Length: 463
Image (cartoon, rainbow, N blue to C red):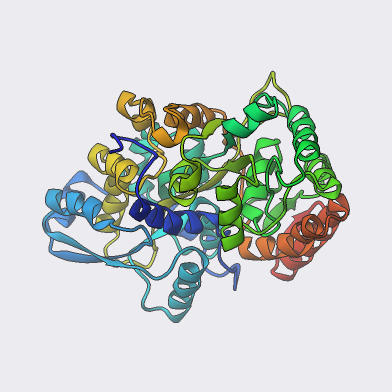
């Protein structure tokens, strides 16, 4: 039986993880309109709500609606309802990632049917703040929670004017899961740099043409963004409501594109779509010796590649500069409050309690196997000390907790992420799949994003 904070688990756990992981993989929703409304949603200058008003609201009979794809979240919600018995929360699964966001935007446009609170991935937040759809949580006491959460997650939920648009729930700092048995068989050391990784890729595939060091999925823009994040990329930098710098074809991006494009051209890495039957079979058969993934990956893999139990280990991603270790993030989500809610106090208190209450945060880590966003859990000896058999007794949570401290807090997302993701798949992703010129594909991606952004009324710098 897994102990507290374990990342191993049963097949039922794996099905739950698939739901969350696929939510984490999706790169967001459409921007059907930008502009409209006042700048910043009118909350930047809002006065703090008094303690007396909060206490009164939390004792008033209220029903809130929460859209979330998190399985079995009723257990965490029960903790909230126990503390605030006058407030009841109705859970609705409106889909995961993009399907939910599409329904949400439809409801917002119609002026009815939107929930009070919503599960929202970090990367989707700008898509909804640019349309003034989210409530700034500062007036409701959210600023006091800053020290509760890992610094980089707090910057992910913040606005340029200091707004707090959501409360972090889980994260996906990126690391490398690797097959120790395959490494040992071929005399491969865990690569500490990307140069060492490339050399190992060539060595392994030459020794055994049926095995690749890794697979960089040609359908996975989320992984690419995580790798770009680790490399120090700043692909999207927004200033104000309508100005954005787009840099997906700059020096950092070209370094990344040249590196992975070359390995793909040489045929020493796989490029097949991930989360498909073929990909699952490949993991179980030992076709891939590593998986570059978010911190949710270890639990997911333990249920998806059971035939390989005991052979896997975890390590940080290889580094571009070993003297300056860095990490990126792939996945994770938050709880946001919809600005149109008729019960802003209750909704804001719910969002804060759900993700900061110690018992609830621990439950997310042990029931849903989320990787924590709270500093307390990432320093908890029971969580860090877990030694799952699937990973040969390695303290994998400790590995990813250490990685989380290296994530750059300045990375930003664009307010039209679904278009960015589609364009990536049709340019950069296609170049990987075709084993063609990935660097040239970056230019096409840059051009497509720039054209779209301008068509939506943005002033674009770069490209």
